[in-house]
Each structure stands twice: as structure tokens, then as C-alpha cells.
Length: 159
Image (spheres, rainbow, N blue to C red):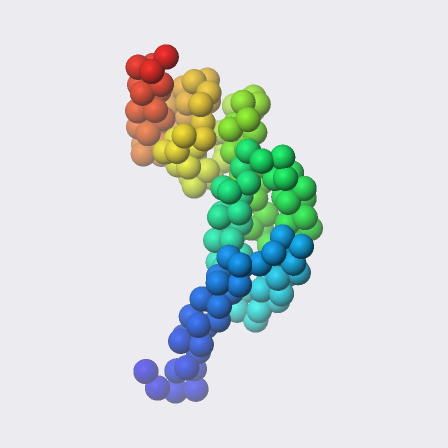
């Protein structure tokens, strides 16, 4: 590839890899500042992707921990102007509510993204038969409905 932008791809990939590495190793006290710095990158799609991966990893690690709430509030302030990241963090908060056995309105489950419904039905996060029944009946995709049905069958066999 030649031309004035020929080196952008590799440089962006290297920067993306460095961001992921830094986000993986960041101390909790420095996390918000690093996330904000990454989000200031001129390549917003790449920055959002790196921070999105970080949010997914951290949220999964903290999901049932008491620290999750404070962490999510801090991250909400940092990512407030990024629609995709804000929605992803909100959906991790919904997954947390389910993991902790809190009830959610049916509309919260059925209007959530395909990603949320897939994670909810293909992991052990959702242990509520009520939530699984709702997703088995009204999940957004056939894949989600099938996965929820399988989880329900497994749940019925063990209880």
C-alpha cells in the first residue's frame, strides 16, 4: 500500500495494542485518567474499541464485587459523551443486577442489545428462571431464544 496514509494502519494497530496493554496494567487509582487519555486519541473508533474492551474486562471482573458501583460511576463520568460505551456500561450494570438476583422489568431485558441478551443467556450470570423464560420467549434473535431455552433446561435438570 502506498500513499500519504500508508503507515497509518500499522501505527494505529501499534497504538491500539499499547492502549490495551496499558489499560490491562493500570492501577485503579489511575484508571479514569488513562481511560480519558485514550479517549482523546484522534482515532475515535480505535479509542472506543480499546476502552470498550477494557470496560468488558473490568466489568466482568468486578461484576459481583461491591466496588463495581463506584467503578461504574467513575467510568460513567469519563465516557459520558460516548454513546456506545455508555450503553455497554449500562448493560453491564443490568447484568450485575441479574447476577445479584435483583429483579428487572421485562422491558429492560427485551429492549437490551443483542450483545446483552447473548451474554445473559450464554454465561452463568443469569440464574433467574424468570429472566431466562422471558428471553426464551421474547429474546431478540433466534440464537438468544435457543440459548435461553437450553439454559432453562439445564437449570430444570439441576434443581
